[in-house]
Each structure stands twice: as structure tokens, then as C-alpha cells.
Image (cartoon, rainbow, N blue to C red; front, side):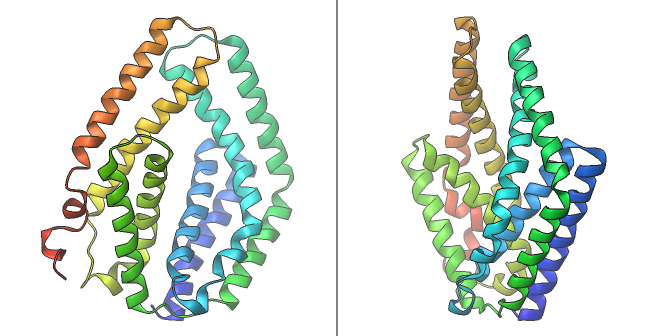
Length: 260
């Protein structure tokens, strides 16, 4: 991919990132926090793709200053997710709810107070990346996708629901994020079945959310039957994933791509 096209794709996402940062401080909306983090993930995924060529090997290092901002936004997002989990399971936990609300509002206030500094960090990172971004040969992108798909295939084949399975979801999402950029150059060699991969990562996300619910609420004084229901829910979601991930490679890229 040519340098000019690479910058064009990234610039569009940087603009969206800054847009949601502004909206967070004005509207204090959870969806903007989510979109802010998603766009940073997209930038990281695309830089990971571009860094497969030696000239771009240091690209991700210029994004490191943004990591602290991403994590702080994550604390706000996490508190909100905890509240959503309690609501979804119909748990009446006044103390837990109050603690999570206080945490969310405190972190959000601190985040908004640092908007100007965050903006400077983001713009500085963008400038450094633009300066050090070079063209990425198609062969390097193809090699990257083949490697990632092989890794995901091996993880799913083990059928073990552990941290690697959650990491597998991250890999799939990153492939989908970067494929928006890579699709045209690599289409003759690899054409991803995006709807299938998106459905699979969604199922993996639902399983992981259920696991987090169990971990979160196991430390609280809840009826044993409630925790048993969550465990049953986890098992059901695992079976769905096992069924959907069979023949992953064929489903992910299609039969027509197997011998290319």
C-alpha cells in the first residue's frame, strides 16, 4: 500500500478519535467513550499491519503515549459495563451500584479535565506516525494475514476456554479493523468472510462477558442459584462457539481461497 493511501486511511480515523474526545467532554456520553476507544484500537490494528514491513517496524512505539489515555477511558467504560451486568442479571446491589457509579463519575470528571493535554498527546503521536510512515508491500500484508489466521485456527482447534481464547477474539477484531485498509491490495490472495468473523468475535465477546460477570459477582453475597445460572449460561455460550468455529479456516476465507 502506498504511503499516501496509508496516511489517508489513518487520517480519517484520527479525525473520528478527536471528534469523540470532544463529544465526551461536552456530552459525557458512554457511547462516545466506547467509540473513542474503538478508534484507537483501529489505529493500533492498522499500524500493526503496516509495521510488518521493516521500514515501518517502529510505528507502534509512536502510539505508546496514547495508551494511558486509552486506559483511563477504559476505567470509565469498565464501571459502566459492571453496572450494565448487574442490571442485566436483575441484581439489587445498592452498595456495589453506588461504588461503580462514584468510580465512573470520578474517572469521567478527571478525563474531561485533561482534555487539552490528551488532545496534544494524540496530535503529537499522529505527527510522529505521519513522519515515519512508509509504503507497505502487498506481500508483507498477505504474509501477516496468513500468519494471524493460522494462529487463530490453532487456538480454536484446541477448544480450550482460557485467556488465549479471549486473545483470539482480539486478533479477529484487529484483522477486521485493518482489513478495511488492506482488502483491495490483498483481495486476489485473501478475501475474508467479514460477516462470519464478526459473528464469531461477537460470540466470543458474549462468552467473555459472562465469564467476567461470574468473576465479578462471585465475591458478592449472592444466592448460589444465581451464580449457577451464570455458569450454565457460560457453558451454553461455549457450545455455540465450538459449533461456529468448526472449519474456521474454510469459513474465514472461503473454499475458493484455499489453494491460492
